[in-house]
Amino acid sequence: MKVLVILACLLTVCQADSKKLREGFQDLGEELGDLADRVGVLEKIGPTKGGRWQLGMNINPADGHIFGYVVGWATGQDIGSEEEALKADYLNSEVWEEPANYIAIVRHQQGVVDAVKVWQFKHWGKSLLMRFGLKKMDPGRQIVTSGGPIQESIAEEAENLEDDPIFSVDGDLAFNWAYANNGCRIALTGGYLSPADENDDNTHGLGNDFRCDPLENRSTSSLWVHDVSNIQDCPLGTCVAVRLQGTDHGAGSSLRSGPVYGNYAIYVSQDAKTFPEPGYQLETEVQM
Image (cartoon, rainbow, N blue to C red; front, side):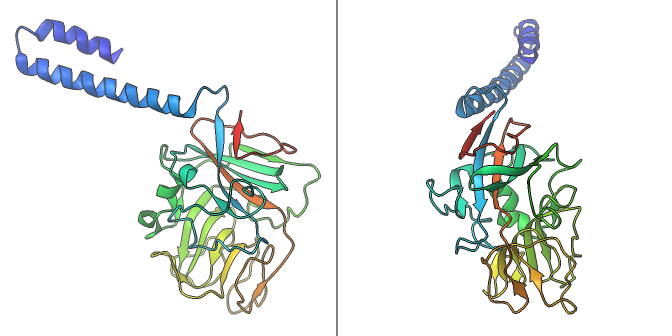
């Protein structure tokens, strides 16, 4: 409609005002350029009925590789292999750079969905690389969704839900939660979010480090990195046993290995608002 209005205006001014004519063509070019960009996006993602999800990351808390707060998140380098994408730690650099409007965090058992939550990002069109990159790490502490999850689906037989870092608490997603010399890449607002200057080692979620420079993406010790920490109130100085999932963590004296509740897969989409229900067999791409 805007294009038609511009053309109609051009017909009335083309003989009277050459400046307006030039400006009209510039506006028309911008409008058509924007339309071309949208068509390009549609061509890239292909025809979909309910949207498409792509696997950006998989976290296995007991595969021998530690994501922690630093590894992969801000740089977006490839980690793992396509063949082991849902069995071991994995990061797909191409997906990490794709614009994302929706995010799903999926707990799965050997690729079978156990529990899933879906959120809509507050700001559309930004990739995970942009959201976790260095420019977002100082000061960090972004609440990137609003209104809570738009889907929450948990299998009736799902276990270990009482302190799961994603599925035992409500709220929105908090990214890059930097506090003193600590960092947590993904936490939920329904859990405890430490004040910025509080060195309490007490924000728990996915991608953690209790001794780092969270504003510069530097770990200052290998002792305190850990993939997944469960929801708990275990502040530094009064608590001597931080409950973790699996064995992927440093040798810090208070870090305690624990049962693996599942792998945690992070999917993103430009257009899908829902994710398959528990029992679904995952692939690196999920067509709705």
